[in-house]
Length: 441
Image (tube, helix red, strand yellow):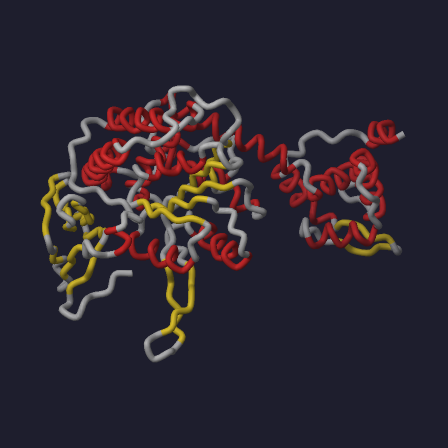
């Protein structure tokens, strides 16, 4: 949160003022902060204050701020020439390759994600990056290596309470680097889920109640939009939230022998140099970056395109872009495979088989329950009643039913909705009922 001091000066981390970028930098050696002001497409000055022309004067956050002084938030120290975009990406990927063992595709993808983090506010939607696996599989190492290059990374863990996470994100508008995101506390997990659900789309703050000095409750909208880098052992139960992550499964192969057991002191200096170059990239390219509609994947679900487009828009090389698109689409197929095993998908298959049996656009709930129980018998699932099936169809599939001559049926008007649900759950071919009967006999 940026609020003016008593003298009308506003402590600032980052601000876009028309065609001018203002960014906070921190000199670790001199323990001083300053503002980099870029007015002319990458040309910059280091200043101690900047007048916006509207009467507001921006000043840097103090170097004694705990988050800056203790390096909970990492900042660049000064812009450095980065050369060409492909050279900067090669340096980033080389850095990651030296210190963390990632699959080749994810290593390249993570390099572009780091680049995306520095210009994320040029887009309206973002994906998250995740390392998932058991302890001892390199998740924390990956967070340190990737996170240390991201835009204003803020390092936190499950040991942190959620309040400072909300406040820090709102104030610094940087990258949340969250280790051990499997929060044991249900309240903390709920807060984290809200933060992650709202943080992919610009203009979706989280409302939380603060107390004023006079002990009045005062709702405040916390801005949580921005890149996120997460490490966890499991996944989230919320499937919509799961779809926002680009995930690397750790511990699936032996560790590369050239990976150092401990991180060397040189990593810190190398990361600072790259952050300085990435700052220069932001100053030079921010106003030139926009979504590239040619990167949209025709066979992808709308949510996947929405999640991936910002990242793919930064990829100029057609071969690399195609490789990333294939990576995303492979993930979509895995999600389809998981979705096909859900109770919702099994019920949809039962509905379609019942419709095929009767050669009508609708089937009775009793017939649907029979088909549902036939498939369930193969997996050892207990049979369900027609009443349970009808309730499930109405509550979970949102399909209307009606009663005709004492028999409950799905409304004929629901045919289009059934087709759309079948496509969503990846149900293309339905085995005839006779084949199911043979398997059960």
